[in-house]
Image (cartoon, rainbow, N blue to C red):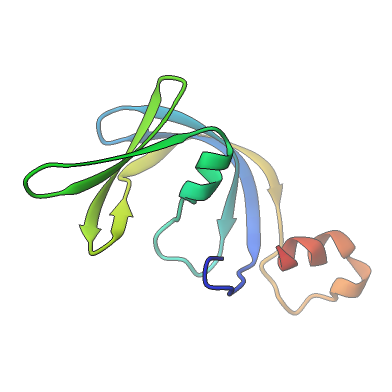
Length: 118
C-alpha cells in the first residue's frame, strides 16, 4: 500500500464495472482486501496497464480522466486531493479466494503466506 502498510488480499477476480454515465470497463486481476471501507483503484496500476491520465476542471470541480482503447473512467475530486469514481460491478469472474484468518499456520502453506505478504 502507498504508505508502506500491508493488508491481506482475500480475493482476486476479473470484473466489469459501469460508472454513473454507463461507461463499462473490464478490469483484470482486481485484488479485494479486507478492512477497507471504500474500494480503491490504483491509478499507477492503471497507467502500468496502458491507461493514459488526463486532468480537467470546471467552475466547481477537478477531474482525473483515465483513457484506454476508447474506454474512459472519470474520477471527481470530492475532498481535497481525493478523487472518486462512482461505479458498480456488473460482472465478476472469481480467480482465487484466499483465507482472511490470520491465525492459520502459514509455514505449511507457502502460497497463502506469499499472498499475505503482497
